[in-house]
Length: 172
Image: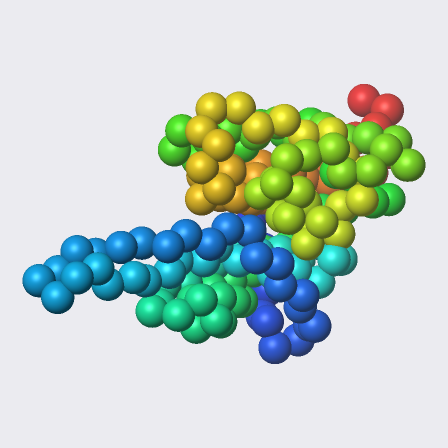
């Protein structure tokens, strides 16, 4: 009974900042020797609740990053950010990687590891407690973090979905 509340965003309307999460060199052995190519995972966001990730592959590093940024701009989603933190604790899972994201009080900072930190900071989250378990592969961690963020709902959305007043959501 999962409610799909993924809100797509157009990249032309906002100014985005990109962050390189991971870059990998891949070698293909051929008759003439080794041929190297690169894959880059990039996260883009406006630091105001919009975030997306992308994967770029190319023969050169700069081309791979540029392709990753273009791909990330196609996968933008809107996530709820309330006073610099997330509305509630949430588990996210993708393949072998799983993450736990919890709200934190102002001044805590982003307590998260590499790939998760890039996604959370790009989304504009400034105070959060996060733990990554299972696979530490940056691909899986980034996708699991995006999964957790897209599952989150703020009080206004919950009230709208239930058809009740906002006070009833908080006071039962």
